Every structure is written in C-alpha cells, then in structure tokens.
Image (cartoon, rainbow, N blue to C red; front, side, top):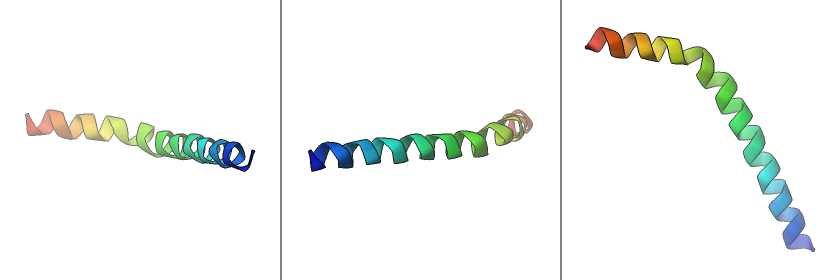
Length: 40
C-alpha cells in the first residue's frame, strides 16, 4: 500500500510540474516562433 501511495504522490508532482511548465512556456511560444522566423 505504501508503494501505491508513493506512486500517487509522484503522479501528482508530475501533473503540477506539467502545469507549471505549460504556464511558463505558453507566453514564450510567440517569442520563440518570432525568433525562428527572424533566423530564416
């Protein structure tokens, strides 16, 4: 049972990390696309 609880905790942390990454990356996407267009 302790192993299952640990697995649930890790999945929760993974979802939180994904949320944080999404919140940080989405505003930067237009800038990155603009840089790629400038390089071309």
